[in-house]
Length: 394
Length: 173
Image (tube, rainbow over the protein chains, first blue to last red):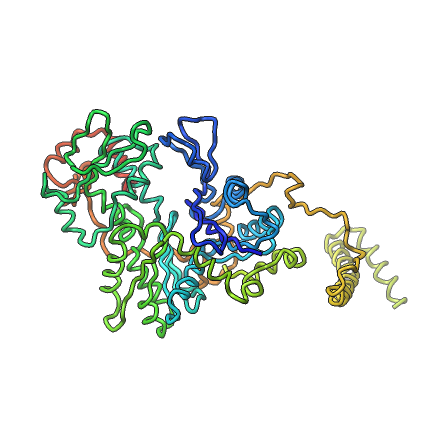
């Protein structure tokens, strides 16, 4: 019996057999393209679509929590069906990642759907951060504690772990994630240069291609005010037109002038002022702490003996960790806020997006995996929701 | 037991005539009291017997429980084809909030990071540069005189759009 690991993210679901090296990344949504109005693209069917302009998303998650089950079921049907895994669900066990403090009604529905509709042999539900903590422990067995900063699509969670057990009092959430960053970039480009309010997909690519986290914010801000060659930050981004240019790219020379068949957006201070929201949500009116301040708050909520261990092992996961300069910035700011006697160490894994998924692979290899972490279909049929409630610590 | 039994019944009958609600509720209470133990005791007994008998039953799966319907189909099955109605996010969150939590329990609503101690940065709304000035008239921030002259040309809806970008368009009394 093989284990399937599913990290059901709000934007991409990472799924694959635990024995595999890398998961498949499936967009966890339905998409409708302007070019093909009738058709609806489920999950990775979007690869067949040639014209991605004006792509419209229908997401199963709201605020990071599974709300729209009809959409989610279609995506899961696609994932477990012949398009992706082609798995016979009744022969497998599944490990699924879910957000912290998932609502009990969602948890119950999840048990029900996995056991009764997909008929999985056994189920293991776990927080995404816990999966990361298991992976972190597997990577480096000397560390007992770790602090996971999971910055995803809907929000950023900061969670202290002791021996892969989360310390609930220390969990902090910042309601800033990739979605807000993309939307904000979309809005400021629309107000300043070009109307792109319908082009979420394209602007998300712009964000991934040119945005970075500044480590010297005010200096960089001054550079963006300069003109000509002195301005080393400004970049011209050529938007795709989906006939000649399939994907947007950064122009080598940033003259600010477009050729006849190109459409460009000029990315100046937007490049770093957008990811800056992760560190200062109050800049756009979200009255919350940034990541470094929340890290200190989260660690201070744990017993004092753990503090040095947590500072020593901060793990970054989630898509926002891919911004260049992110790790350095988190390190610098936490270092300046943390007590001087503690050593601070921030780890950015090679593949921050799939890190929790890899943690699922680690867990499935434990000897006590089936007994300690799983509920089998038989147990569920005998004891119902109660046994799930007892086994899964979510 | 036999002698006092007619007494209350007569009493009740006499009390019934004026139709006082007190006597009615009392009789109702008595009725409930007598019914509940009667119905619950056999239930418990049967449960006990089930749990006692089920432990050996695990070893031989052939044992058929008389109370289990062999043709039973769970209503939640995919085959039932019923469309479920799912609650939306707002309903779920408010339902969670109304649960009897201890004030110190960490919950969905309580793990929000508190406001920052650092002051918010001020960007020019038009160009994104560091803004040193605010237009007292429209409350738009700007970095230099060029921008200021542009602000004065902007129509009202664009101004409120700019302010909405940083959630600053609160109607000021």
